[in-house]
Amino acid sequence: MATELSRDKVFFAFSSKMAPAIRIAQGEELVLQTHDCFSGQLKTSADTLETLDWSITNPATGPVYIEGTKPGDLLRVDLLEVKATGPSIMVAVPQVGTMGDVITQMETTVLEHTEDAVVFKGRVKVRQKPMLGVIGVAPAQGEIPNSTPGGHGGNMDCTLVSSGASLYLTVGVEGALFGCGDMHAAMGDGEVIICGAETPGYARVTAQVVTIPGLPTPFIENDDLVAVIASAETVDEAKDVAIHRMLDFLTGVAGMPLNDAAMLMSLTGNLKFCQVVDPLMTVRFEFPKSVLKDYGFEMPR
Amino acid sequence: MATELSRDKVFFAFSSKMAPAIRIAQGEELVLQTHDCFSGQLKTSADTLETLDWSITNPATGPVYIEGTKPGDLLRVDLLEVKATGPSIMVAVPQVGTMGDVITQMETTVLEHTEDAVVFKGRVKVRQKPMLGVIGVAPAQGEIPNSTPGGHGGNMDCTLVSSGASLYLTVGVEGALFGCGDMHAAMGDGEVIICGAETPGYARVTAQVVTIPGLPTPFIENDDLVAVIASAETVDEAKDVAIHRMLDFLTGVAGMPLNDAAMLMSLTGNLKFCQVVDPLMTVRFEFPKSVLKDYGFEMPR
Image (tube, rainbow over all chains, first blue to last red; front, side, top):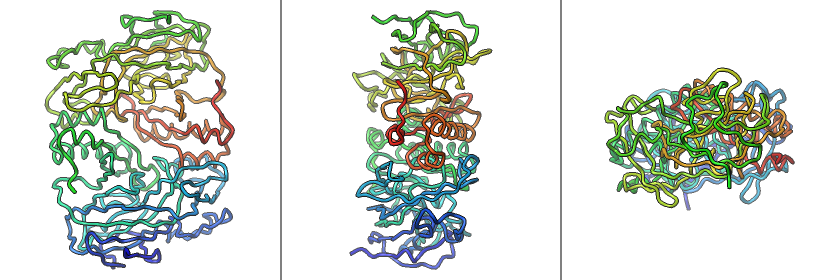
C-alpha cells in the first residue's frame, strides 16, 4: 500500500518556508490526491467565476518533504500514474486568456467522464490523457504563486507531465518540498482559453536524487523523447532558452558533437507550446530518444 | 499524363508583376519539379556556404497561371503528392538560425535517401515526410522575397504542407501566379538551425477556385485536422493572430457557438510552431476535424 496524501493538504505558493505536510523516503511510493484548479468550488453550470474565492485557486497537494534531499540536488520524480477521477470543469471568461477580448458571456460547463474520455456538452468525446498543470519544488528563496511557472516547475501546463513520464527538478531547499495539482483530464498545447478539462484526480509518484551533471531543469522524459521546459515573459524569449538548453544537454550531457546536435534538433526535434495564458509563457523542446541511442546515449536509470 | 514544369522555371520573389511560366486550367494536374533551397549548389560536404550565390537561394518553381482566377478568389491547392528525390543537404552556419551564437564551424552534410528515410551521417535514420517550405501566390501588389512568409503563403515552413493536404490561399492577381519549392524530406517543428533535409523533388498538384465565405488564409487541411497559419515579427504576435483566426473560422464558417469554439480550442486544439528562423515567425493553430463533425460541419468538397 502506497502512502497517501489527502487533497486537504494543499498550498498555493511554492515557498522556501513551507512546513511539510508529509515526509517520505526516496523511492517510496506516494499517492497525492489532487483538487481541480478551483478547489472544487465549481460544481454545476450555475457556478460561475463571479462567486469564486480566487485565493484558493490552483491548489497543489503537499508540501512533500523528501528525506535526504538538499539544495542543488537533481530530483527525478517518476509519475507512475496520473489518473483523473472527474467530473471535469471548463470555463469561458471575458477578459481572460488569449480570447478574452472576444468572449462576452461567462460560462461554466461540466464534462462527464467515461472510462477513457471526457464528454463536452454531450456532444464531443475527447480521449483522456490526464496531466498535471502544476508540479514543482520550493525555490531556494522566497515564494512563487502556483499560478506561475519557472525554474522550480510550477504552472508549466505541459501535456507531457502524464503517466509514465519522469520530471527532473533542481532541489531548492532541504527536503525539496514537492507538490502537484491542477490536473487536466485532457488539454491541447497552448491552453488558449486558460483551462483544460479541470479535474480532481490523483498522482502516484516516487522521487529520488539522481546524478546527471549538467542536466538543465525542468527536464522531462517519457518512453519516446526527452524535453526541456522553459518559461519567460514572452514566447520569443522562452523558445530561445528552451533551444539553447536542449543544445547544452545534447552536447554537454549526451556528448553529441555541436553541429550534429544542432542539425538533428532541426531535423528531428520539435519546438512546442505548453501554455500562453499564465504570468509567464511556457514552451518545450522535444528530442527523440531514438536519436540519442544512435549516439550511444541513454538516460541513466 | 500530368503536365510538368521543370525546375529551370523558377522565381525568387512572389511578385504581382511576374510573367507566367505555364498556364493550367482549374483542376488540371500539374507536376512541379523543385530544386532544393540552394538551387543544387551544394553537392558534397566540401561545398560550404562561403561560395554560395545567395541570389539564387529559395527558388520556387513557377509562376503558374491558373485560368479563371481573379483577385479575391479563394484558391484551394490540393497536394496530391509531395515526393523528395534526394539526396538531402543540411548546413550548420555561425551567426545563422537560433543557435548561430553557439555554432563556430561551418558545415555541410549530405543525407542519403533510402526508400522511406533519410540517413544523417550514416548514423541516424529519419522517416521521410516530405513537405514544401515555400508555397504561395503573388501578392496583390509589390513583391515578397521567397525567404519571407506572409498572407500570400511564402516561406511558411509548415510541416503540414505535405502529401494529401489542401492549402487555401487568397488570390492576389489575375491567374494567381502560384509557385512552390524549398522541399524538406523531413523537418521538425521550429526549423531551429534554419534548414530541414533540403532536397530536390516534385509536387503533383491541382488548383481550383472554391467558395467558403470568411475562410481565413493561409488555411490548410488534411484527413485529420484543419489549421490556420499566421506569420508576424514575433511569435507572440503570430500566435495571437492564429488563435483569433481559428476562432473566427470556427464561429463564422463552421457555425460553432463562440464559447464552445473557444473552450474546444483549448481542450482539443493545438497551438504549434512552424518556424522561428525566417524574417517573420510562423505558427499554426490546429483543430481536429472530428470535432467539426460533432458540430455538423464538414469542409466543402
